[in-house]
Length: 212
Image (cartoon, rainbow, N blue to C red; front, side):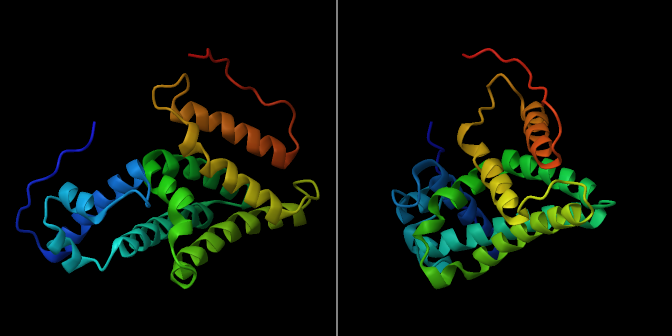
């Protein structure tokens, strides 16, 4: 069921912008960037289209800000795992768990990032791409340390990191809240699969599930 339009109330500009960004996030996640309209975003935010254009120049402006905020938050969450962990193995496991949690908590943002980033013109992608490289570097640095210490087999840290990020980011597409596994249990499975592959462990125990 479509989200009902909110009734506009007088808000400070910063709060109004946050409400508009929240409405845009809902519309982009539901309809996709190309099918989303500024009129629908304004309706969801409970304001007129004219008021929306007062705060944001266009639809692309909204998309860029949403993805910049999410990319920065995502990076900071993973960075905190590295700074708190004692050693690269603990950091890697903590990042994997946090990566799963972030996707579960901010599923709309990751959907928009994966599916709609391509609609942003090249130069405007700068800060988003930098944060994505920073995230890749966090994973690669952990794997580099593990490789140098002989803790993992000789594999390309960059290739493995890209594979991990791709696998994790696809979770939004197929995970169902009403499915046979909860997010925490699913996280245990993915964590086992990835760390088993990275560290060359034996068979990974995967819970039996019944197809709907």
